[in-house]
Image (cartoon, rainbow, N blue to C red):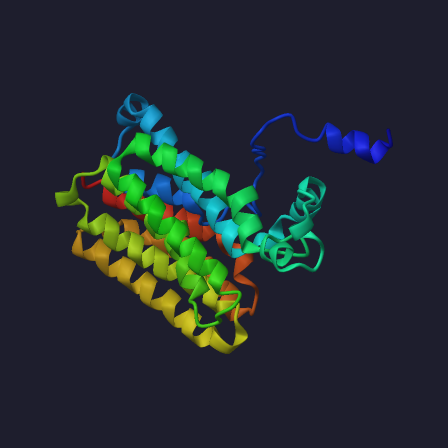
Length: 286
């Protein structure tokens, strides 16, 4: 047996291959941090967290690795370089699947195909996410369906440029994970301010994403300014002016980066810290 064949045979021992790693830097606003922010904004204590540890673990598993996998697999399938090699190794050699045939093109035997992608990669993640959300809470099941639809729209962006990819990304990354915490753990009557804060941070992340496009940088800066002003007004309205000092300190690196023309990726940690700090401020009222 050739060495390459030996490595291929030993590459996976499971029916469904689940491999985990940190996607880019962990010190940036992502779904896992949005879950923590939602928990802090709800005023959860350490005692509460320990008492509801299994539920919190399921919330994190659903919102971060599972929803994130569905979004990533559908919106950027090229991020899996080994996928096409795997499809080529396991293809079924039937007459109507010969190279160049309509069926071969449809099922991705001659190149990338959304059907092959969904069957081999996205479908297992979708099924597991639906199972976890079914166990967790009825609202989680509906939110998972929404994530699947948003991720499908993210794939359509590859064919239809008018699809707002950045807005969809923000919903999956910030707002829906935060909303998941509110619906599963929170009291709907007291969650107006946390959801408003979630919306403002969603606008903030949308601004950082939009700023990457040179043609829309002014719009991105405007979104950053509006979101931060909105957070300041929210804290003032809730009579939490002292927290403004910490929020201002965490927002300052963003404006320094803009002033010096530096990429906002260099100050992503401070944005994440600002989100958690503002959420902690709201939680102090509960």
